[in-house]
Image 1 (spheres, rainbow, N blue to C red):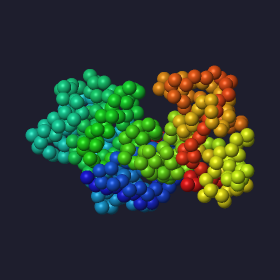
Image 2: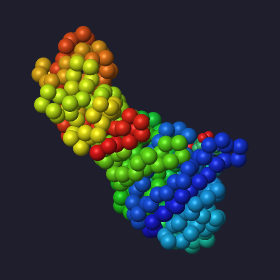
Image 3: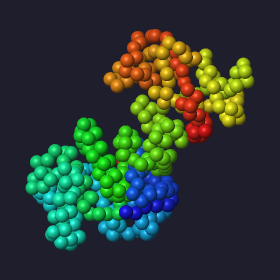
Image 4: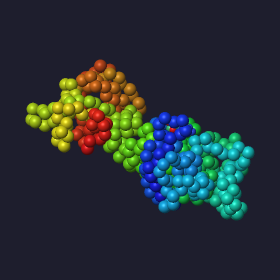
Length: 358
Ligand code: ATP
């Protein structure tokens, strides 16, 4: 195992007008599962490929296990990769596919057999070792690709959207299998995805990328609960965080309120510098309590029963809100509802920088 240190990685592709990665630094601890998450084109794959040695940076450093590997050939980096297109060899049986890398490395036959049996057992592929990949399901083929990567005993495992070719159900079951497997192996892992649920489910930490930079790198619960910038709150969560803009004014008792038309939401005293100025309030859809009591009055525009919850689209003094209610909640479109909002569920953002304030 080994830690990965990325220092100030800059990469612009030939002919590119913007940086694919823009001064990215990241530390992945020994044995950590780090997920790179972000929208298409934000630079996740470029970053992973620089760690793999498949792209060279214009500037910065890649250090694996304390060794500078920035310009080292991929095969000398002691890492394994699993790609989106599970590139298994169609003309080789499953067992041969899994042992392929070991054979190339000149490992002796008994050792290969032992390792292949171990990986096949871990990934529940033992019954399929003598089959050709064409006779496997997509999920089984993807497991072959993972097995082939883990037999190599690499210090670092790199995965680029390994679940994206699987259908939704298979993805769900394989996600849990993968999490269990990587936890057992304890290999330092860097995993690329644009799927926020996958990122939150798998990562010890999640690095959320935007336009070639890391917007936030934290534990899954932290990126969800305390988005460091509005972009993160808007990218993670389905539906995403609500953002409301209002002006901060002193109420009758002198306490600060965010004026949202007819309503006021208490503003922490620490933000008194914003009095008379605008402020952005971020609230997760499930943070509101909805019913017939509460200080905020809203009108129900759309009622969507989603099975495990009910999704409400509400209008609150001209602001549109998404609110998640318990599955038993019932109301008709057009109904007047009351909302309450616990102070500890409010996140405050500067309207210019869009950064979290406290
Ligand atoms: P996706 O999720 O769509 O794969 P990503 O976050 O992995 O996206 P990258 O593939 O790293 O993003 O791309 C980052 C930026 O670099 C994008 O603007 C992309 O168009 C550009 N880019 C990527 N590969 C090349 C290339 N080979 N030549 C030129 N530009 C490239």
